[in-house]
Length: 189
Image (cartoon, rainbow, N blue to C red; front, side, top):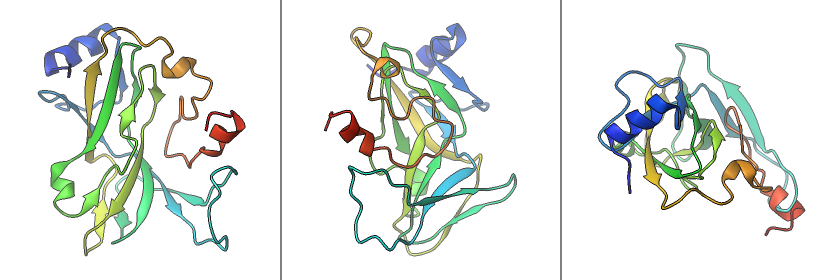
């Protein structure tokens, strides 16, 4: 079951669901509009011929955009960003993020994969963004970037994200590079 605006407001009022930094008029009929943060990770040119997902790698460079400034997303470019708000999902809810239709209509894909947010997750959400259009797109920290859709579970999760041994991104504060190598360290591949 998807939570309605009434249910979202009630979960926020009781503190069961937490969305820190939520702007005014961001709760819609069946989702919450989230805004773009100011930290991005751009991918560096590498001399390595491939990425071995079993080994730690950070082939990104952090770029922080000052207040009032913009970030230019070039055609074909893939970057990591994050939502400005910090969220905490209770053990009996799950969520999904989806891009804004208006951004899709200019060729911006806000989230390529892994849009699902586990029950018990807490932190900032990393966005996997790309420009599939023909022109550069100026994006502005603070702009609406995606929607958060919340789902009610049939019962609370037995092992929510905050209790999992393989929770690689719990309490992240901004755009983080991949931690896929930890799947191999924990023998969970």
